[in-house]
Image 1 (cartoon, rainbow, N blue to C red):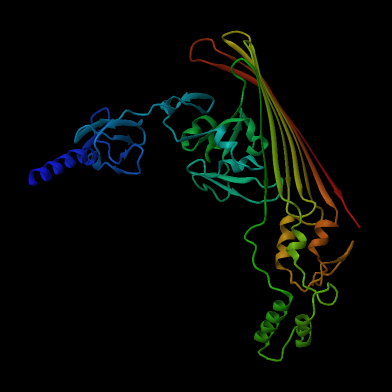
Image 2: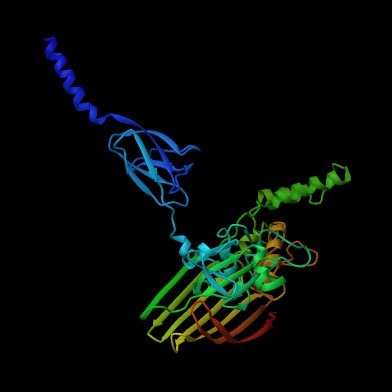
Length: 467
């Protein structure tokens, strides 16, 4: 009987042995044989892993025959089977990004040859963001670049851009922005037409652009047609903007009670009142009727616009043996949060390239945009909203069509009347940019470029007053 039990135990041990875990030690090195510290060693398909120490060594317990995935920044992923208890892995460098083309000054280089501080942002990272102004696209995408949006007002929500901080309090800290070789501003270009953005952050850029580059340089390259055939694409989004971080407001009764307390603190007399106890009692026992008992929700009256932001872009790319044409048409519409506040923009871009020979190419850039900005004529949207936040609830807002109250102000300044009944200010901006030139390559790695630029802008402002 004892022999039979021993035989059964030995059999079970043989069955369970393959399922037991194995303690594996190893070392991770690079191609030169130097240890790779901080490399991640993970069991494939399982949420289990360790990191290598300063000597590149690791210890991990895994099922026998498990596959280990070893990764580290700057190296390609390597998989190794835990067939023994002592492993050695050699990581290969990841050269995929070193072949990227980077725009530096008047030419391009491979990333491997660039020694300055350059950040490259591709189009797919830009078009995922739903913004009305292109200057806001860089926020959080480029290390060392600070982007601060100054306003949320339609047509004026562009951002300030600082590269490696503010360099001067008086001379300005704006970087030099160049779009297809032309000095411009980021908000003059549609994000959908951008191929890449390169940010030159260090002082090396001053060797090319001089003192204008002391605050850094942002180089924008627009899309151009490549390949053969015809391609049509569409990109669009619709989003909704709303007011945030609105402070909690007091009711009409709370306003009167707190005003009385402030008056008593000011005079030191408990009998000092700005609002009589009888009036406060009336407000407590009477439903607001917008006549003699007023409890105005100013923000509810002011923030009535839908705040919708929509953008629609159609691109047509036509490529051939000699002629390549990129065309982009964009429509953007941004509604504000208050009445009579909106921004509408049309953007058309046409980039042709004609290859005359292997050495000579004629290129052009034709860009036209038209924008229309609508604001209340007597005050800005920001001031109207600030007024609405600070006005007391006991101030009369609106009694009926065209009948506005004093808003509880001695100057009768009513933000609701300013927003919806004081007329509008309409600004139309039209900009046309044309650039034509040629590129000649007499010998390998040498390019001669010459071009002609013409920029034409017209701004028309119209004010309409109501009442």
